[in-house]
Amino acid sequence: MQAEARTRRRSVPRGGDFAGLPWRPRQAGKGTAICLLDLPCLEALSSCNVLAVLRSSLGDAAGASPGSFSTVNPCCYFPCQHKGVCVRVGTEGYECDCTRTGYFGTNCSLPEFWTRLRDALKPSPAFYHFILTHFQWFWTIVNNTFIRDTLMRLVLTIRANLIPSPPTYNSAHGYISWESYANVSYFTRVLPPVPTDCPTPMGTKGPPQLPDAQLVAEEFFLRKKFHPDPQGTNLMFAFFAQHFTHQFFKTSGKMGHGFTRALGHGVDLGHLYGDNLERQHELRLFRDGKLKYQVVKGEIYPPTVLDAPVHMIYPKHIPAEKQLAVGQEVFGLLPGLMMYATIWLREHNRVCDLLKQIHPTWDDEQLFQTARLILIGETIKIVIEDYVQHLSGYFLQLKFDPELLFGVQFQYRNRIAVEFNQLYHWHPLMPDTFKIQDQEYSYNQFVYNTTMLMDYGVEALVDAFSRQQAGQIGGVPNIHKQLLKVAIGVIEESRLLRLQSFNEYRKRFGMKPYTSFQELTGEEETAAKLEALYRDIDALEFYPGLLVEKSQVFLGTPFLVNTASLQKLVCLNVKRCPYVAFRVPGGGEDAVVLAKEKGPLDEL
Image 1 (cartoon, helix red, strand yellow):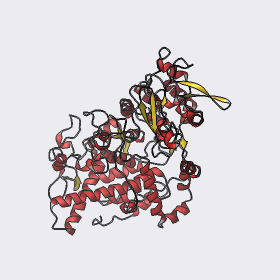
Image 2: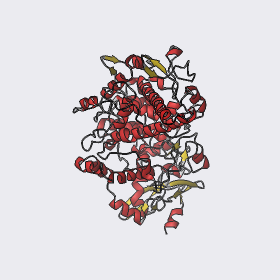
Image 3: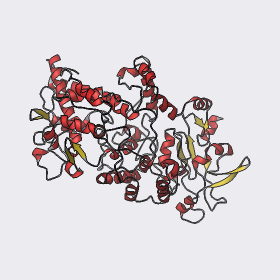
Image 4: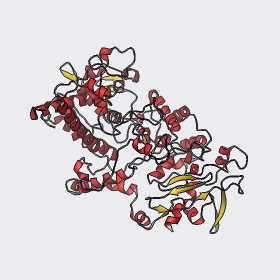
């Protein structure tokens, strides 16, 4: 029966009692369910409200005479639930491929026995979060036992299963194909694009034309006043996020939409070494495995483009002797990015010196390649144990250990998704001004400031950025006016890529879709403005949905971030160990950190 249900085809009726719209009422018990695609009553009871309820706005979107929707692509209604794949059959039919979803039925909405049992026993995400952010005494015990490894192994496998592997779609192929799997020039996609022949940009919901991107950004994103991050996130975190992600977020506009130049699709430190061999060779010293550098005031900094002639993006008025050369061509934009590039340059050359002492017979190439592997490991450790730890707020201490998954059945091929690129535009983190020691810099003074790094030095910038609070992401309009054009570009790009709605992504990750704009925002004024523009909550775009969603009440005390890895990286590459963390100091942290002595420079 299940196999039969999986392959059952549904067709869109041509006529009907509703002016040619592809649905009609069916009797379901004592009431009448008005459902799309003439669903069987058993399935209609469980999925009718998700697939779509009859709305006048859909009729407006049609904007045509009766019968104009008679041949609409049925996949535009997104009928397949629980990760089911919609496949159009003929001109009016469709199939939902429910393979390995744990569900069956015409629209993959009926749970199999084990799925039903699992869902009945599985706690809610809010329950998990509550447990992980409370009972610190319990987690202190767990973090010092083997249970920590067991839980970390569970975290890795569960999180990896959220993303399809091997990759399934790209922006040119909204269906399974060899090209989507093998062509790494594309970003992958979690959900396929909205079909091009749908009556509205979001399928069948919302207006036939989406609201102006600039209007959306100015109305819902533009900062009226600065809202600090409630958990004390600082600029050190903000610049780390931008520096780290720019090794795999390298959109290739010349090739078209949805393409990337970061073919490694992961942590390869291309932002330090370059994303191709020619750039790498220009940055290398070819002696003792080291990268090129210059010495200013007794400190090591990246070379200029005169010594390492690679393409860097700087305004024309900045002379070549002021342009620093690093692996990522955009890092000259902000002193915070070049600060991190300098720290990693020093770390690479420091590691090469240690390797040379231990292995005096190794040539330049082996020293370079081994140092690169070591720095990749250091980066992943900092990302998991400091960066992700800060984001989670968990009392469970996350751990990087490559051996955790040894002997475990695990399949994962890393590919960067275009949705990941979209959601990582965290520009609300940026403040109104940048405070360094007793000076305050505006955006015009800070952006492309090529002297700030060497004038203040790495130590002073690390200390200043660690002490200045970053902005709150989501729930409030908090993007500075200087950065609003970036947010506008994100919205415009999402439309060219035909991303599905915010609610479709919530469903894809097992989250309950919002039923109204007020439920989404938690207040009436913003909800009314959104409804006037989008008409239907299921038509709200992905990126706007992320930023207008009400902020969640933090469950438990903010986690005292363990910044041992980040602190070690900085302190091994400066003369004096400054305050370094991913959140602003408080509760005596400042005194504790500054009281620590620098570790020996021969540490790996």
